[in-house]
Image (tube, rainbow, N blue to C red):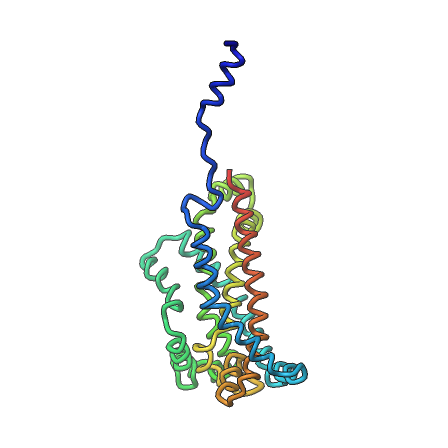
Amino acid sequence: MSSTSTLGALSTARPQPRRANRYGILPGFGLSMGFTVFYLSLIVLIPLSTLFFKSATLSWDAFWGAVSAPRVVASYRLTFGAALVAALVNLVAGLAVSWTLVRYDFPGKRIVDALVDLPFALPTAVAGISLTALYASNGWMGRWLEPLGVKVAYTPLGVVVALIFIGLPFVVRTVQPVLEDAERELEEAAASLGASRSQTFVRVLLPTIMPALLTGFALAFARAVGEYGSVVFIAGNMPMVSEITPLLIITKLEQYDYAGAAAIAMVMLMLAFVMLLVINLLQWWQARRGAGRAP
């Protein structure tokens, strides 16, 4: 037998490697995917679809009148404006808190780290009552602020304070792991080349944590837009002044205006979808940048 035939027989007899499962090492993709779609449809899609069917009972003129009334537009302005301001404040404060927890060791560090998660565990109604008692005219802080002309409770400023309280953990918990994984050798190299602290932060560290900062900002903003429990107590709920959109939806439900409530909820739902899209794009950008930096 020739050498060519021998090599051909050996290559034929050699066992071929098994083709990797493109869905992962666990079997049952069809069953898992079917259960996932069924569960999400039952819990998320079907309840939300009732908004479309309920608002569809209104004519276009009635729908537009429900979602563009002056009182409703004022609630949009307060809800999204206060959420934006609170998210911007948390963007700066969350970065400072994350930096302190990651870069410094101090007594009680674990306690401070645990306190960051307190807004997650605390019922929102309890947070609203606590903030109202704190910033009311006879509260611990309100009695000192009001003589200075700063009224927090029962004003739009109180809405911002409540949204800052519930949104801070989103920024901290998004930025903190990125700071922990940041390579300090790059900062030391920049310092050895003569870069100042501000130049090192802006040109070396900030590009690394910027995707996480933007993701935390988007999460805090999205959470603040839908907040109800912690805001309803401190806002004062005055129409055209301190009335948020979720409260207006509850008011319409109490008045048995289900179609009007569904119409306003539809607008909030569409905006929520846009924010979720932005959040997912930011997370994709962060993952892509992280993969690009990997060796």
